[in-house]
Image (cartoon, rainbow, N blue to C red; front, side, top):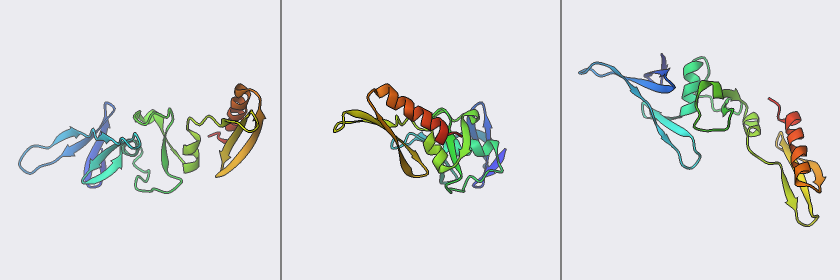
Length: 154
């Protein structure tokens, strides 16, 4: 059990539970389901009138020394399998903002109409890096995949 924003929480059976304490009735555990934000696909929950991302709460409940309120660039929680609704603790890890962006479905190449070839590129530390021009789409994709292994390794 962990205290967050003045409320007692626990993680059990893959769910977040909040202890509802009242003066007139016995206390009981209530499941925090929250809702999915349609603009970005992340589940959110309210705890004592403050909104939290569900996956950050799950991570905090398993790692209460982690600073849940730290929104710095070095304190993101990444969904390893890229599924924003898979909030199992095994699927969550602390990463930097840059590492979090590495874990995307970017294809890393596009067709350059003027030249008539595929161009591959990769972002590293905010810089766009040119990987070359390729006749075949598969060659451009492979160049990006190889560069991703080098530059986006975690």
